[in-house]
Image (tube, rainbow, N blue to C red):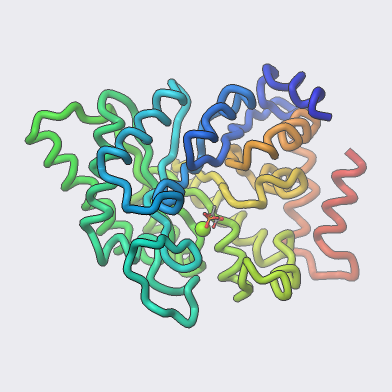
Length: 325
Ligand code: PEP
Ligand code: MG
C-alpha cells in the first residue's frame, strides 16, 4: 500500500469529478518538516507551536521560537503554513510554568485564555512569528476562542506587535492572515459576527466533539460512546463551511476526523475543500479523494443530515456509500 501512496505523490489532489482539495499536514516540530516533501502536500494547515514548549525543560527564548518558525517557513517555501499560537494548559502541561489545580482542565485556564491573561508570553510569540514572516505571507491562528471579543483582543496583540516592529525597522510580513480555531460550541452561534472579522477558520474537531457531547476526548470509557459521524456534529460542520463560503472566507478542518478516509469523504461532501491531517494519513486520504465523485457524495450525504434517525446509523449509511463507490 505504501508503494501505492508513493505513486500518487505527484498526482494533483482532485476528485474524480474535478474538484481540487487542498490536503495539508499537521506539524509541530522540525522532525515533521520532511513530510512536506514526501507527501507533496499543499502546506501545513496546523502548526502546533506548543510542542516546542512541551519538549524542553525551559521556556523557549524568543530567539529560539524565531529560529523554529523561520526553519518551518523556509522548508515550506511557497506553501502556506498556519501557525497556531500556544495551546498549553489543561492536559498540555509544561513543567516550568505555574499551574493551578483544576477540576476540569479541558475547560480551564488554557490556550488563548492563558495567552490573554499573561499577554507577555503571547506577545513574545507573536513577535517571533511576525519576524519569521518578514518579507513573506504569514498565517496566524488562535486556539480555543470562545467569544468574538477574545478574537478581537488577540488580534489587537498582532497589530500592536506589527506597529512595534515597524517602528524598529524590521521587515514586516507581506501580509498577515489571522484566523481562529472553531472548537468551542459557543462559537457556532457567533459565526456571522466572527466571519466578518477573521480571514479564515479551521475546525478543531477533536475539541469540538469533546465539548458538544460533553465527553472527555482522552477517556476511552466515554469517548467511544458517541459518534463523530452523527447528525449533531455533521450539522455543525455543515453550518460552519456553508457560512464561511457565504462570507467569502476559507474553512478548513484540522482534527482527527480529517485523517480518517470516511471522515474526510464526509467533509468533502459537506463542502470542505481544505483539510489538514497527520502526515501518515495523507496517502490513504488522497487515494480516497482521487476516487471520489464529490457531487454524488454531496447529493447522497447532505439529505442524511436532516433525515429522521432510523435504525441504520449515519455512519453505516456513509460506509455503504463509500463501499459502493
Ligand atoms: C482539535 O481540537 O481538533 C485540534 C486540532 O487541536 P488539538 O488536537 O491540538 O487540541
Ligand atoms: Mg484543540
